[in-house]
Length: 118
Length: 113
Image (cartoon, rainbow over all chains, first blue to last red; front, side, top):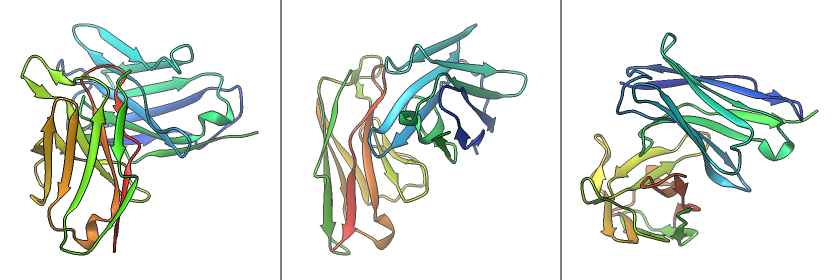
């Protein structure tokens, strides 16, 4: 059974960087038919896809236009996990952040409530 | 971006009755390689992540009760709960995965009448 375990801080100061990790069990981050996503959810924006990483002989990433200048998503084969860094956060980045597998998002992490506040 | 529009925003249905949720995509989400629509349905309960119920518009994920039925094609899709149970109270979302960015509908809240 695939499980995704998220970790990272729940409180980030404005202008700082939000870093979250999603550890994978039951699958491989480097499987060449998989994709690994970050999604957030807030009352104002609903469910918003932020980006994904996937391995096809080399690492690739795609990002939402709304965050593409501030986000990096990386895969780590050695630790079988993937990470998200969102730079220069503002209170509008406060949300529940999820990691999820695949294109139809068949498995999700438990969610991390992130508050951006000084 | 493909816009996903769900209706209604909420509905109240008696136990054992049918609930119907609609989802419309702003353009075709037909995946050419398998000729199937790249449409998923999720159920979300408070404090939990969304849970995949159906993908490829009508294929139930293993373990999902058969009262959850996905249908439709082209740009118009439907999730039907054939006989509403108490544990089905939740918010339901559709999502397209035919193109980046992945996009979601606004959600439909299902309650017991």
